[in-house]
Image 1: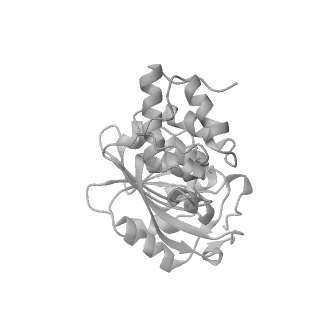
Image 2: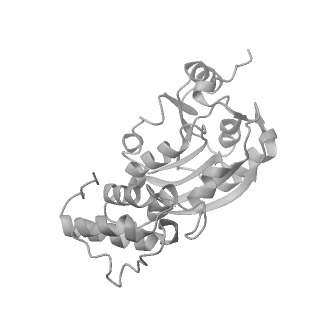
Image 3: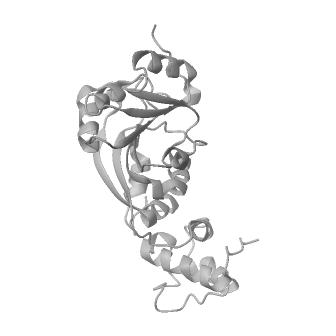
Length: 269
């Protein structure tokens, strides 16, 4: 029976065979790896991946699709975890083996899921995700461009990120109203920053008023936290705006906040 896409799950099923093969080529599964697909849907990418590996795991929230997947590919070829990826414990899944992630992520959960996966980064080898092009633009943006912001800084501080290729709306059923892109993310052996929560708060303060100069927003707050923003190591220009500050500088400031406070800094009033 035909499955009606559910808006609440953001379902747009990838159907273009050439795109599916390009994703599988990018992932290039090897024997013995633990590969986990997030949001397999109707199983189009699942089928292509299972042509290249003898075992695959998947996380799917839609119980109807879970039943279809289990019927089509019984264990041990495919192990389906019926769960919300936003709440799923990927570290527990990777208790013995580090995992590789792949998936056509629903647009309505992509950003919070990517941030949530930072908690599991030490258990992840790499990730290949299909995302809304606008989100990938933000993930890979360098400093100094309009797309550069909190999401890109957070992910780049912990990952090497790379846009692989674009995908048009007609590659999906039903077609979304936006273009998509595939991104590769590989966790850094040594993250640029020591404490994720501190960096997250720092960026919230800085980019909360991103159109304002740093002298009127971030610099006074840093002084209130016991950090001297005028130190040459930070390289901060008072008249600059947040998008002009490179990732490595944000990381240095976050580490200085940890050293100054000995714990997570206080949020502004």
